[in-house]
Image (cartoon, rainbow, N blue to C red; front, side, top):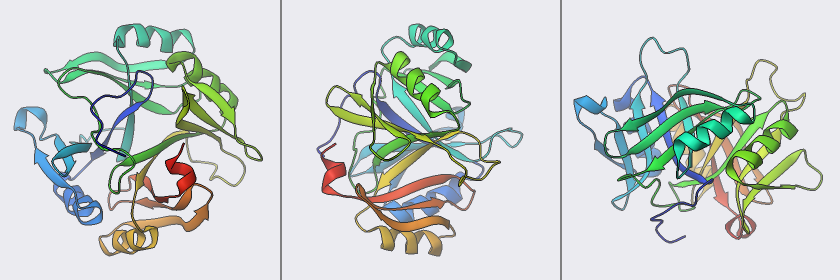
Length: 259
């Protein structure tokens, strides 16, 4: 996919990592994806831009020591009026936990949760336009919410962000479309999922070789939880970084690239 300069309203625009040790996170993800880093000043908490070929693909922030949430990757949806979207989230049974608030001159953000308990963010762009590469090795490629109530989550995201759900045959899974393009998924968590695992968004990164990426992640101190395994959309594996943040790596198949 060519470079991206603008994301459509209601679609994933950005992901960032909250981690207890930014230096260790840079070492892990730099080694895994070949990222270079722009480390922000002290007043930003040293928020770090992760880059490929000089373009932003993700962010990293310092997780406060007393934070009640674990180290994790967070997904943000692009919006054009964050206050109006916050009202829609509340109207459809979601919760706005932080914001909307200004992030200097970069944009406005809010941290929210859907009615089933999965957390996500919203971003109204100003200077910062979101991820500038998508579907390229080392860049974000897919996002799906894993939840105990797939139908409720499906209806929520469809109503709030104007997405059209389409059922995937033979699965309790819906692809969520903006126009002709699938931009995210909703997955029903069944009995095979650990009972104590809460609803959550899973973010995927494209890689050139899934098995090589898994080997490298383990060498760098990560843990492989699922896979590698083949799917119609590509060969994938679920990994956590040394601080426990989960993500998926996938070599995209032609089917996924055409979605």
